[in-house]
Length: 231
Image (cartoon, rainbow, N blue to C red; front, top):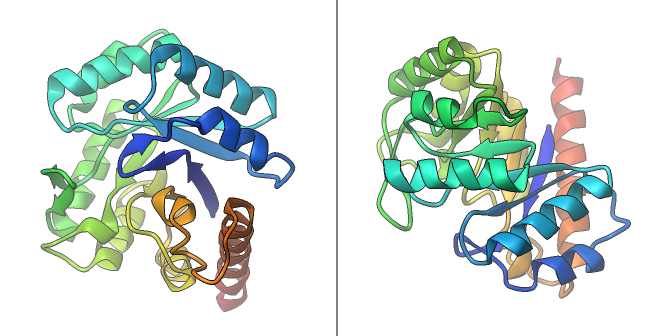
């Protein structure tokens, strides 16, 4: 299972994201992302170059659920040249916008709504979306599992895992080692953390962003090892 560190807080890319990249260099983080909001296009380009230049995979996640905003974000993803785009629900239109690029697309499964975003939908809804997206050629799904209000978060992850061979990426409110382990057991391929690292809530007794990230990475490794041991 992969940990995707998001250079974001409160659904926006942090203003000093490039400085943060310098601070965390050497930790071995291979998956790093940002949102389409919070900084300008030139900064997004610089972030993407820095991530990929260090041998990492870059991700951009769409904040809005409105079709027009999502399509604009898809065009931005092409301009910036990210490896992966997360979010949005109109998968057909998003894929058409991404056509000709090498960007892997992971739309939202379920029914995201409002801001802060909550996730509606049953496990059956999520499974249906996964199958539909796979037929369209999406690389997987972005699942706001711990933002769910109509179903158990892990039931949604398990339903997605059973319905798709693509990647199941869980975003939002993954803020404890227990949740990371539960996601690994349920079959998630990756999870994102941004705010919980920046505000220190993942490891409340530690103060530096490097310490937070080390603990998240350790929890990810422990969860993967426990899942393998369980068979």
